[in-house]
Image (cartoon, rainbow, N blue to C red; front, side, top):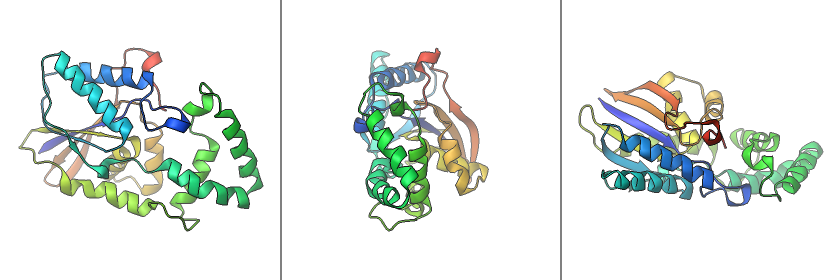
Length: 238
């Protein structure tokens, strides 16, 4: 039996620079690291996706451990834990949807104008256009040169084959994003694929989810835990 601690990255940047932590995201990641370093918990291995926002979150945690006089195992980078490429999907799908659906085209142009302001709320929202584009991708409505939804699911599920070894009772830390975490939670609970993105939408930035792996079976212990978030100003979804 081993324990898998999943950590979502801190809040990312604006829509034109999303794969990097915002100042608030760095504060969330530091708070996470300080909380973990103060616990008796020790990790047998640490894994991170290769995306910048995932690695920057891990960097803040590592720095917090060092300040506390503690250490983490040398992290392993595994692209299998990367989030799906939302903005690659945007570039491929949005023009096709705009050509097919005048209502979407109008809403999409409005969002693009709003996003020109760095402090606009659209940067921190999952919009109707986001949902429409991802739905078209999941449904394979268009033939596009982007990782498909089935391939994404298979990639994330195949990470089990590359988990670092852990002795009985040991823990592995995994720094990833909301959807890969939700795919593993769905596997533990037997949740159908159409509901995975509902889980994803509930995951807070820098949240922790704990799964137990025993005899090849996954069990959910905790989901979306944020004991390091001490006030509403640090609690964000996007």
